[in-house]
Length: 140
Length: 142
Image (cartoon, rainbow over all chains, first blue to last red; front, top):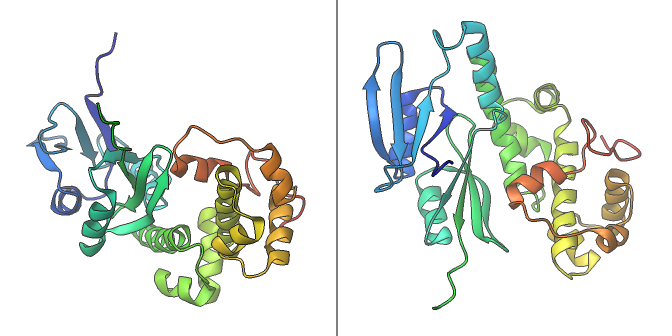
């Protein structure tokens, strides 16, 4: 049946601002940035992990009627679209400090959990991001 | 018009995030209203209109949710947990907890089980709610 996750999508309110954040601050790389005419197809990925992309989609016509697009934008800014991304890191504390120093909004400071150390940040639009340092694998 | 709503939403979300992040600190309405860049009265009104409950109630639910997590997953004392989540009096904590959850912290601890879902989701979904499907407390706090 299915092999892997290839593409995930979140709504962003401005794609240039999204690039500043996801590439400039989080350190992702642009996978595809192409003007299709009817939309700007913009995907990013973790450096080196090109088989998993995140589509940064701007809600708007012609994909959505203007009134619906406005509703989506309002929900994004309330943090209520369900847009959530989960990343892993080798060092949650260091990554947390780096992102905080870059002015990224922190929603949760690093906490020890049974599944690792994780913390939460918010993108400039209202989407929620979790960053997890999994427990180190037991020595072989 | 709608851009103005988006701007307001983001400011209020910033204030709500501050409650999520710094729930254990003595947060007050003036401080939160400053984060949202609005007056105190307007902050309470617009927060409620946007998120369905007052900021005070939201912060209490956040603190109670954190205390529920600590009761489930640690063996720290109730007094210790009360202080750790931002209450300064055990009486207020127990009353608030009972009002929201419907039972005492120790009764909750006795029946609660550790969950497999990540904290950020249990935080949102296990937080006792005064609206929606979750069992409501027997009396509103704010």
